[in-house]
Length: 395
Image 1 (cartoon, rainbow, N blue to C red):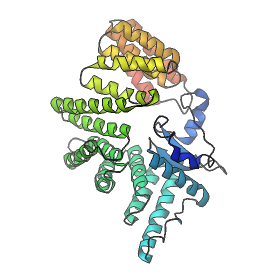
Image 2: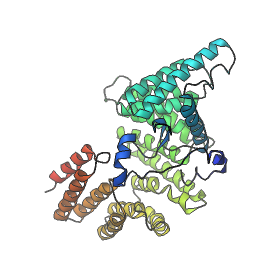
Image 3: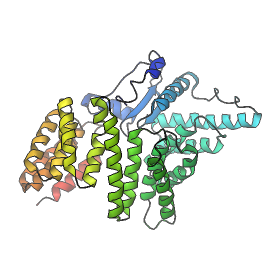
């Protein structure tokens, strides 16, 4: 978002309309705010009502310039008018269409209130009610679909996720939302039990949608969202045990990412693709291809823990244990907060690879102690359980 979106000059009209804040959710002092806002994923954007600091609008994930522009306009309306939708009802001609728009907008407003408050089950129900009432060309359709999908995911209603994504995709094809819709749908379909009667049909339909996204160079989709669609396609191949198909998808994914990185006009833009490029190189069995780009990113961003953390992962895959530990040391020296736990997990895996189970035990014990000491809002019981499970599995 910093590299490709916030710098766009067309967003200048919003500059004086908001007080802009960025919250580092890894810092201990921000744990209470993270808990209050219920930040489920990064990035998440909020527009707060200055009167009472309620969340007037929540957007989970990245956005294109167009989406951010619309989001900011919607946020102002949500604060000024309670998101009642009076701006659209009755403007398209005909009493029946006006009533439909009004019903959809009212349901959407209710959904936004629940979504902002973090009540995902209620939000999902109201977004679906809004979509059912929406007239053709309803301007809030895309955001309602994306928000409904996330709310359904958080509510673990995987069948509803897959069905909504399948049904909404034809309307959103070639729009900025298409990649996220297809990828979310695939995630929901793959989460269904293997014997679910609709699973195979949904996976096949959504696979075709994701392929349509990645194969259409004209689709106005952000590069990282298109990359997410490749990841979803790869998940299908892994789910079906298709190693040949997985290699095919991973090779296409890697080539796509290399092409996008080559277009970068600034180091901030190039490094955006580091994480996904590393994952793609690992998938195709060539982690060494990540080394030059990650070394460049570490030089360009010497305070960022991400480049050395990714180097540690690449070196681990190459069994270059000493280089992996050295990179891990550099990453841990720069990291803080919950993200440090993942770095410690990687370090323990490197130590196991070196045959030093005692050192791996000490590292995991450190990670458990750190995880248990995190404040509410950053503490994760599932992470603590996972770390303890890894610890108990050590000889």
